[in-house]
Image (cartoon, rainbow, N blue to C red; front, top):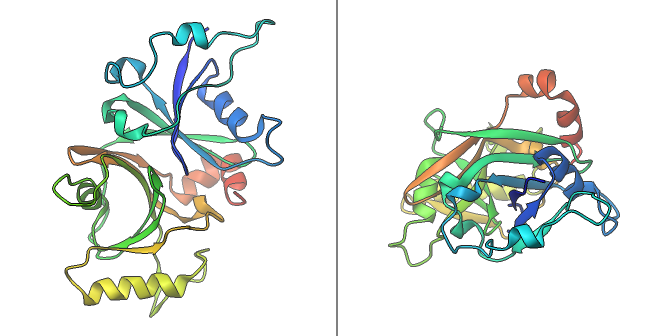
Length: 254
């Protein structure tokens, strides 16, 4: 059986070997274990083993450790690493991003050139790995990636995965359709940065609420470092409703 490598990248990092194809792996990880009483929200990267740095992970004997069960059933998951995974995976090794709902439905996104969209001065980012604060920023996604991973800054990350979130103002408040836990605080953070031009980022919360998370995704997801970035475009609402209706219906309750 073919061994796939996957990196769960939502509220924690890991590198997992599996015989399952991406959709089956996503369904299993979200719902298919007796350890869970209910499904969980999940995101994971599909990793190209051939493009990993030699020696970055303990893979030399993975064929001996990730073997089918005695009855011939595939090995669903064999953990390779659970610590400092993203920083040791080159961007070139990331194939696709898979988004999983709590009932195990999978939406797969291909990587493309980063898209910052129309000019804007207010952004809201949900960092996903290796840290997960909710961040307000005046920096567009590409600039935010470079800033957060700039090795010349005293506090920086080697690599970052995050989501660009929707921001829709109605005067001095956020639009009511956005399911954020404390919209007034988000506006306050944005206004504070506008008043302090030298402050490009501000932490909204270090323990964000992930209620209805997929409903809040804007342009999509970014993975990058000081050398470059990958962009995983999130489908428009129309495409979600017409081409991914079952996933979207499930995602709205995730």
